[in-house]
Length: 538
Image (cartoon, rainbow, N blue to C red):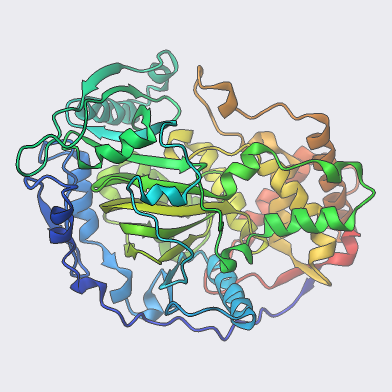
């Protein structure tokens, strides 16, 4: 093991010059007819006025109160640079050269490794897609396709939300395990425009409480979902759709998606290896890129994305308010992070006492989040975004920490679980000798060893009766070969560096490395400067 100084990039964070606070977004929403005129409004700390959620209709609903409190948190653009959590850059819609992309890549990696979400304003766009039938021609989708949508319904939502809060407090997980959830038919034909004329044909929606996810869900076609955007009885959010732009991720996202680079590098460097021909699993492909479409006034409460994945989104149309919480005192410490989790997830009211920052995400804005960041999303205007998940060598210590925190909470506190994390990480480990020329960060190796050494430790608790596809799949022979090959490489390097003793079991190694990570999690503003020689792993 060796110690080396970590050089910082010259890429500087620039305060965007354009004042989005001058936009009267509330009036714009009314002219579109997406939000009832009876809906209330709220002024955000940054000066933007938007509507409140209009469903459920009660004034003291969880969604309405949540947005009022969120509006009083800090606008990241108004925070001083030296105390801001969001790292912000204005790309000014300019074409990025390869040299600029390399510099931007280095800067983003540094910010993510420090636990800071990144906001890139005015990023070059390949397409602008609006939530209309004509707009969706740019997406690979069938308008008659049946989709599952997270929703808020005027006549149904309050009951479900109250049951969820009660379930949270009493921890009665068995209730969800024993039932598939309540169902209720709702005819949404009552939607009308401002002159009382019917705007959409009758649509019968079957609402049900989904035990896999938090909230209530409905099944309907893409065309019906688009038409329902003007329905005062319905507000929907189409999450994690496999329908994506053909252009895929922006160049600067591709540059930091190390799991993709690693898979390609290892396959190219091992033409004789039988496992090199194994294609990525469907789950690995599905989590890489997806799209989100949301009606105006939809709200996703605070949650954390699962499996320690980094997350990126780019707005193609509309408006979102993206709010993130800070790490307590900016320290990546297991116990402190657990306390933060307990405060937010076990006491929603106390959560707003925590420091939070938000960014108004307009068309062309890209948000990149490191692993484990707790965030909430409000959509004042109907929007379409593309996004995806990825692993990054620079953030693997945060990935391990986030996965441990996932284990202490049920999966409904996070987005979809992705069982492909074992496959993706194993390919990253096998590519280490080809990615790094001389040294590799010590905490990166510890994180890989802890997770792949004992994957069972990181399995999420799941409810009985959940779809089998949602559970950890049985490893087939190819995947087990990948895992064993990755373990052999890690074991060789850890023994040569005298970090572990020969003959240690992987359960023992994983436990030891978790202890090491607990002791070495570093201050956000002082990235790890401890490295291991890559030659030990060859």
